[in-house]
Image 1 (tube, rainbow, N blue to C red):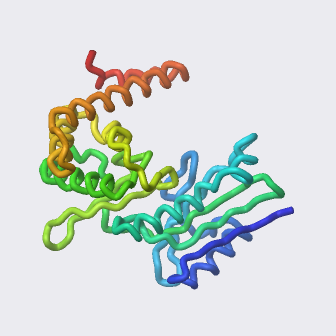
Image 2 (spheres, rainbow, N blue to C red):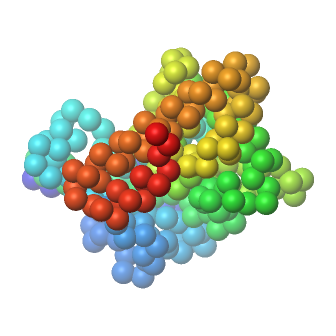
Amino acid sequence: MRHVNIVFNPRYPDIAELAEEIARDGVPHQAETIYDGRNRLYRLAFEGREVCIKAFHRPAGVNAWVYGNLRHGKARRSYENAMELRRLGFHSPTPLAYVEIRYGRRFDLSYYIYEYISDAVYLRGWEKRPDAKPLADALAAEMARMHAAGIFHKDFTPGNIFFKRDSAGKYEFSLIDINRMDFGVTDRRRMLHNFRGLTFDRDMLRYLARSYARQAHLNAEATEREALSRLDEFLHQKVLHARLRGRTDVLEYYSRFIQE
């Protein structure tokens, strides 16, 4: 039997109509595809608002049973984590709704609907910007603030971080792809895992780590060593996975950044 679960942000009751349409017919045909990979991302104008619809891939095999019985689905976790982030004073695009579809005890499809941000850019390539150092200082401050609040984003990479500058020149950050996130974390070493994928530029990583250490009241030398260690761990992991998959292009790319 088909079962649909829809939860929408009570501040935006009109979004329930869109969520019900998606549950019934899938993503509206007029939605623009802005990313097509393992998951798909769409942009849609709805009731005078620009929204994003993230359509998660259909879990296969045992995962369909796990998400149907043991774990919350990715759309629900994205919605709830965004709510919690915002409650704690951090930013993620406004969560509007999520939709889950099951057949019996097997999880099928899920969708996360949230606000579209038009005036922010990805953090990718931040180390090459002319304002790289002040941007790194702002990012370090945001990381220190997140960690002090016990927030651990498991996919804390430049592709999952938006930023913009306000009228006073202050940097503002927004987190996306937040279905893998823990709250109430107090393990500092675990928090430093967040340095692993932020940049392959070792000089800028050192700068970022030392700025973070100042703002988190940690030892600068030890924090720098830990950040570089996490980068090396990340690179060796990528190389190993590429080798196992026979991806010579990926292997060559990541190997360039390894220092023996």
